Image 1 (cartoon, rainbow, N blue to C red):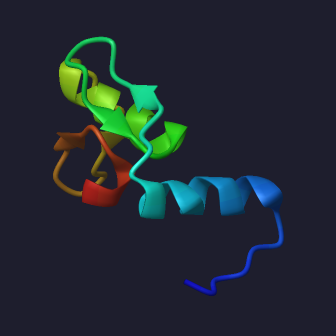
Image 2 (cartoon, rainbow, N blue to C red):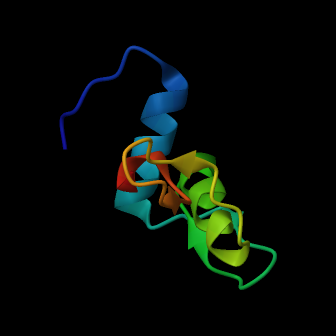
Length: 67
C-alpha cells in the first residue's frame, strides 16, 4: 500500500491488515486480533471492571475512549 514506518514492529503489525493474520486470540471467546492492544481492549468486555469514572456524573466506563 506504500505506507512507511519508522519501526519494523509497526510495519509487521500493519502488514497483518493486508494478510488477514490475527495471531492474538481471546482465550475466553476465541475472537482474534491483528495486535495485542486490540485484544487487551476486547478482553475488558468479559469483565465487569470499569476503571474510568466521569468526575461530573459519576458514571464508570470500561474504556477511556468512551468516557
